[in-house]
Amino acid sequence: MAPVSGGGILAVVVVNHRRHDLLAGCLASLAASTRRPEIVVVVDNESDPAALTAALDPVAGAFDLRPRPDAGNKGYATSCNRGAAAAPEADRLLFLNADTELGPDALAACLDALEADPRTGIVTAQLVRPDGERDHACHRGLPTPSAALFHTLGLDRRFPRSRRLARYTLGWLDPASTHEVEACSGAFLLVRSALLARVGGWDEAYRFYAEDLDLCARVRAAGSRIVYVGSARVLHVKGASSGIGRPEAELDAAQRAIRDRVRGEIARSHRRYWELHLAAGTPRPLRAPVRAWLALTERRAGQGRGSA
Image 1 (spheres, rainbow, N blue to C red):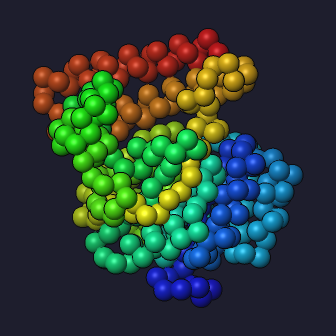
Image 2 (image 1 turned 90 degrees about the vertical axis):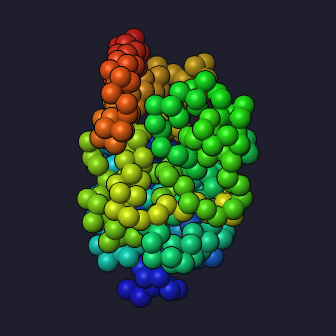
C-alpha cells in the first residue's frame, strides 16, 4: 500500500464504546480531511454489529477500513494496542476517540509537525469542547503533587501565567501556537510507530485514564519530544461514554454504574502513574501523605460503585 502523501503510511485507530452516533461523525471528519489516512481501524468495544455497520457504511471506500468488534471492554490502552496490531504496515499511528471530529486541515498540520523534526515523537492537536473551551488535557505538564494541588485549588485558573502555579495547564504558553508540552490527551495522539514499539506500546495495566500520561512520560524518557499544534482544532465531546462530567439527573441507573466504575478505574490509574513516574522524585516526607490521599480517593470511588 502506497501512502497518499509523504511521511509513510498513516493508520488511525478509533476506539469506540457504545457511541456509534459520535463514531459516524468522527469517521466522516476523517473522510473530509485534506490529508486522509490510508488505514482506519475501528476497535468497537461491547460491539453492536448493526450500529457499527451503519457508522462505517457512509465512509466505505474513503480508506482501508478494518473494524475490530469486541464483545467486552478491556480498557483504552488494550484497545489501542489491539488497533495498532491490526495495521502493522503503518509508519504513523493516530489514536483517536470516537467522540472527536477533526477540522479539515487538522490532520495535515499535525503530520507536518511530526515530519518537521526527527526528535518529535508525539504530536497532538488543540481539543475544543462543544462549549468552545479548550480541553486542558491536550496541553499539560506533568501532574506532580504540587501541580495537582494547585490545579485542584483552582490556582492555575487564577494565575494562568505563573510558571509555578499553572504548571499543570502550562497556562503561560499561547494555545494558538505550536510548541512543546510535557503531556497530552489520548483522545488525539499521533505517534511514530517505531517509537511506540520501542517504548513497549500502551501499558495495559491502565484500564481508563492516565494511560496517555504514562505513554507521554515513557516517550520523553526515550529522548523524544511531544509537540502541540494550536492551529489544528479538533472537537472533543469528552466523557460521552463514561458519563463523567454529566449532571446526575441526566444519567439512568446503568449510566451511573458505568460512571462510578470509571471513577474507580481513574483512581487506580492515578495511583499507578504516581508510583511509576512521580514517587521517586517526590520529597520523602511527602510520599506517605500522597499515598494516603490516593488510597482515600480510591476508597471513595469504590463506595460510589457500591451504591450505584
